[in-house]
Length: 164
Image 1 (tube, rainbow, N blue to C red):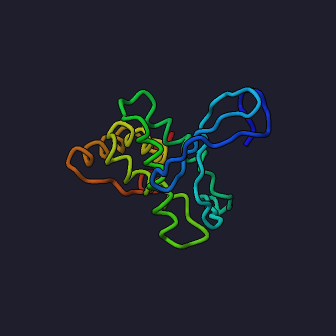
Image 2 (image 1 turned 30 degrees about the vertical axis):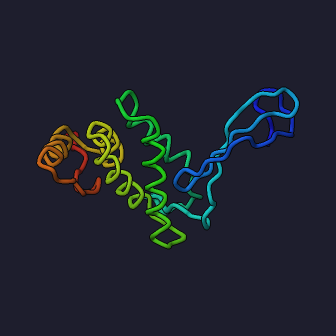
């Protein structure tokens, strides 16, 4: 493992801890003595995402994380809750046992998890994912959330307003 401080190729592990599906290792550089943390996770079978337009691309944890982090930005969430949410979504994806997963399935799983964590983050994510066509569709989602229900409609349920 390369040292992030001096770039030396050698480091040694001074502590290891298992956290859920991940192992965190505390390391010390053999050259400069700098300390840093690495994490390891089991790499499951290759997973491909089928986009709305039919394209397929390799699943990218960081891409998913970026979308979730954006929805959770400036929200008072406990440290590590976003990473736990992402791990939970990934576990559920792998439990499906399929090599290809639709982006809508991933979006639904994220929304299920976000609703448990933070309602504002849920609405932020839903507003992008569900592509609300107008304020009425957003209000409907808010009303459903307030009533303790999840909205499950596709963008096709909310046609874009016509410009006559």
